[in-house]
Amino acid sequence: MAQVNLTNSRISLIFDNGVNENGKPVTKAKSFANVAVSATPDAIRQFAEAYASLQQKALVRVTRTDLNDISA
Image (cartoon, rainbow, N blue to C red; front, top):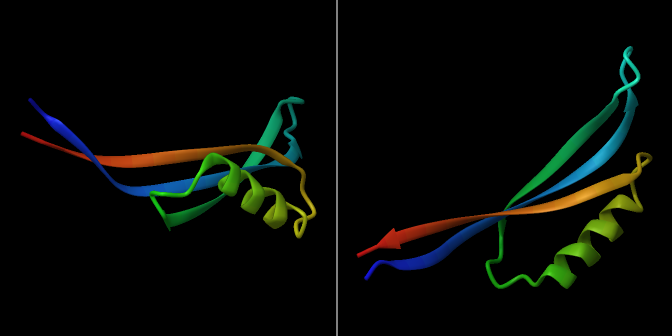
């Protein structure tokens, strides 16, 4: 049976960057690589809110992308 091993995580903070000429929302992302795989969602959210408090743009969304190795 194949096994999955979480090897790396990355988080992205998505900020509101206004609207384009068509009135559609525009966002800007700030990414952080090599996030500890043991980081909890609460810890990530707390970091994101602290980082966002230093920015001029409003935080819209926080995403986490995990990289897994699959082995036999």
